[in-house]
Image (tube, rainbow, N blue to C red):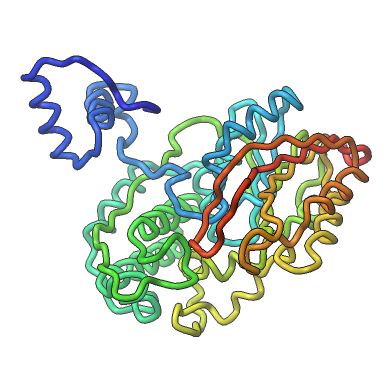
Amino acid sequence: MKNELKITIDDLYLKHLDTNMQKNNFASYSKTVEKLIHDSTDELKKTPFDKFSIHNRRYMGSKTKLLEFISKTIDNEIGEYSSFVDIFSGTGVVGNYFNKSNVKTITNDLLYSNYISNYAFLSDESFDFNKIDSIISEFNSIKGRENYFSKCFGDKFFSNSTAKKIGTIRESIEKSYKKDEINFRERAILITSLIYASDKIANTCGHYDAYRENAEFKDEFFLKHLDIFHDKNKANEIYNTDSNILFDNEIEHSVDIVYADPPYNSRQYSSLYHLVENLARWEKPEVEGKASKMKNRKEKNSKYCSKNAIDTFDELLSNVKAKYFILSYFNMGDKGNDRSNARMKEEDIIRVMNNKGNLTIREMEHQPFSTGKSKIDNHKELLFICELKNNA
């Protein structure tokens, strides 16, 4: 429910409502009433009540708060469409928002951890609910053993006991997949649930570049089902590749909309989310440094974090086959510290996009994620909408 429930209720019913709220550890009456409705409605109780939604993960640059702005801009500037490509999808919140039964949704991200999450939430591959339900119940009561994950991340990002449990669960998922006991989407669902459950209690400020010293660890660690009980995923496609070669290597047809939200500064996501990427891949590489970062993480560095970002962007626009190309952009410029400053300048973006087609720019005031090192005034989220001339 979008707004807190406001009702007049008899004291006797209020007492029972309070009891249910405490029993389920809910923070509001509205959530408690939702639970009561869920449990008494045949249609609703076919699926679990407590689920991870795709936006429940902490992620730098997430567009969750800007989805309505993006949607209204598309409605006003483009109108109807039947295909939507989220080409730098991250955790997939944008692709998920535009995922509809009458829209072919395509997502892509360079990080395998994001690919797995997108596959779990957006793929149309079938999965066995009862099997997933049984496995999650088993995992939530499992006893952890010393393992690769606990040796690397125990007593850093998690307590040692929680790290043992996370690693033990991840190892079990991989063994089940190799034995053909679960299919690829079921594997993706379980890994994604593990990632979301871990992120919920991780000892970080929102990413894994470092952990907080002497912090009190949280051990309320529980996997949940994902919010995937719908019929909107038909014909969706999910990729894990360099965005600049996506249309050359994977997508051979033209689409209506390509939406791009690339990284804009020198902060590499392969380094910020090394732990999540490690957990998703489960290749158990050597790690280094205080934060136990994978030694081979630079293999997944993005060219958009380099000084040649604008040239890479120009190449991307030349490669996509679409009617419209939309770019999200924080007008950071040089307002923050050096690592936060944009690699692509606003004037360069305008120059490049004007060369590709008819350009429209829309803006919205927005306060971005900050670790506290950058004071940003007059910050705006910009949407560059380009009707491409030759790529459709």
